[in-house]
Length: 335
Image 1 (cartoon, rainbow, N blue to C red):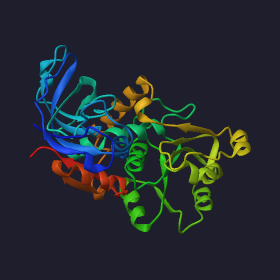
Image 2: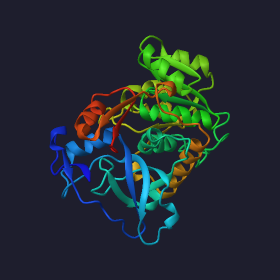
Image 3: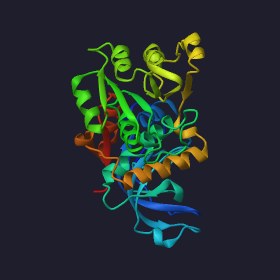
Image 4: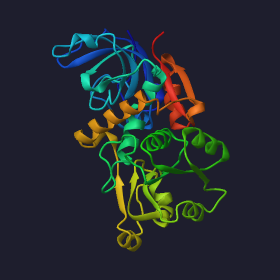
């Protein structure tokens, strides 16, 4: 089978298209014929910073069809369409290959109406978004229709992959969604995703506009740039709100201490790979339910343009993500 592998850390050119044996699933595992691999920032960051112990296949997310199962897995899973999450986390086998084996729970049923493109776009972005939306005190542990009714969510960077997923999940759960963007073009994408209110922070006084929309303040901030936005977040949050940040735009965040104390404002870090198992299970179940309801979509009409690359150009796909391509970068694995 064809696979992308690398044996040392470095730029995209350390990766090569290789031939490998088709793997056999072990106990509790499934083998998936991969259709589409999804690329995330952590994929190129892991490749650049971590030297693998042996031969590493990149990419955490993907979609495909189960074609074999290991001992302990029901045979009726064979033929099931699935989306994959964290395939390469702590493992040598990511989704940038024609077949991948992984634990059965990490291959989640994908409804017939959901495309493989959608399946490959879930994983890290959607699970991260779910976690950010469920860490508030008194908030739901698992999203569902109505779970965020009466709450307002501010999504920083609504045109990004996590921002897009957060907008769609928050809307599905009944929240009022406000998002900040840096251009009119990104604003149109955020509107397409379903944001109720879009604020261009480069053209508007974001704090004043958001306070005008939500005088009592927002309850949850889904934050992509905590260092840059700390003052804004403090200015627009309601009492007992949470700022859930999932990206490291700076090594240090200057938290406004006294306002945070008086507002009981919580600053919550989110790294999807290391969240508690129960929280991960809640996220997978909720994302699956949202997909089944048709509440999560991909493509420009959903605010998430797709950028496609063949397996042989995985390096270009990684570089596109590194260069902040607007939308979702996908790799067509199946020929």
